[in-house]
Amino acid sequence: MTMITCVSPVNGEVYAERPALSLDAAKDVVARARKAQKDWARRPLEERVQLVLKGAARLNEMADVVVPELAWQMGRPIKYGGEYRGFNERSNYVASIAADALSPMVVEDSANFARRIEREPHGVVFVIAPWNYPYMTAINTVAPALMAGNTVILKHASQTLLVGERLVQAFVEVGVPADVFQNVYLDHDTTSTLIAAGSFNFVNFTGSVQGGRSIERAAAGTFTNLGLELGGKDPGYVMEDADLDAAVDTLMDGATYNSGQCCCGIERIYVHESLYDAFVEKSVAWVSNYKLGNPLDPETTLGPMANKRFAKVVREQIADAVAKGAKALVDPKLFPADDGGAYLAPQILVDVNHSMAFMREETFGPAVGIMKVKSDAEALELMNDSPYGLTASLWTKDVERASRIGRDIETGTVFMNRADYLDPALCWTGVKETGRGGSLSVIGFHNLTRPKSYHLKKVTA
Image (cartoon, rainbow, N blue to C red; front, side, top):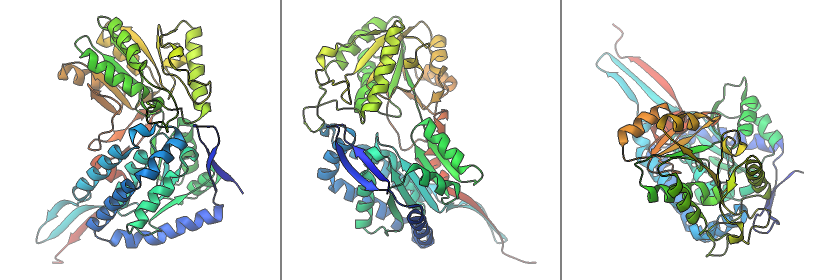
């Protein structure tokens, strides 16, 4: 029997483990979900919406369990109170637009014809969720998929093994049928076999580029609808007219919060030469104020990375950059808790360039590189010099300038004077190796449903 195991970054010990389902047991889960889907879809939309909102509310009531449990699983300090703010914002927003997003597009309703396009649920939606923001990333698809009339099977990353259990527990306790929303533990082979068999009507995956490629290979020839949010190397660009203090505060938070383990975290920053020195000085001071330590300590502001192997990648990228001429500015003596394992001190590098993996490959840790630029053209070229494209953060007082530059950035979202935020009213999407598809907003509902056309002639004469 294969066991799915979560090793806690807090102490390096096994925190939770569950047996992986056999292929036959997994097929039975899918069969139950498919059998339950039609009845679920026939329920009134408002009833489905309210059940999802009640499930979200029930999860809020479980905060005393969820928050420390999350710290044990992936290391985020309890000081930040879990993911409830974003979780609730997203759930509430998609609920508020569900009726409009799923309403028919009426072309004609006359005495002779009724012509319209309706949105029909795909059927069984498979959500493969990541560990870095395990509740918020899951709810991006779970909430609108259920509201739209799909049944959902959730598979969480092993690092956050208990999150799927908690979500399903909350939703089932308020009345969502058990076969409508199910949590599973699967190994990679069983997951690939199910996808290759066309078991699901839609697969949403958030994770690595390598993982996304595996999903695409498994789904090849099945015509299964896919949503993929993969790697990122999101840039910030600070122009000469930027609010310097606001830029430092937001970009450093975007680079280091959650130990830098964010899909849309800031991983590289380009600063106009007129502000460069001041920006770097203020950024080093900002980052140096973190307290690295046990995430269960309410005074801790920076916890361990989710796994020591993730921290190893960050250390290797930093060491490679320094060997090639980069300079590390944050004094490691300020962070005695850095143990060479999962506990990793934050770092800022200067004298970096794009020959270094640190400025081109996903780091996914509390470290960021800062480069000096002379013009918008130079910054734009550097921002686009990446295999990824999720978000870009522009800092200026000129909206037209930001819009003009934004049109030429190869990215899914353009921010001005903010960063590292997912707006549920906008489509969350990426380009290049960051993936394809989009979640949330009206478009998210449309991706979780298919159009069905009705051309009804009312008279036969």
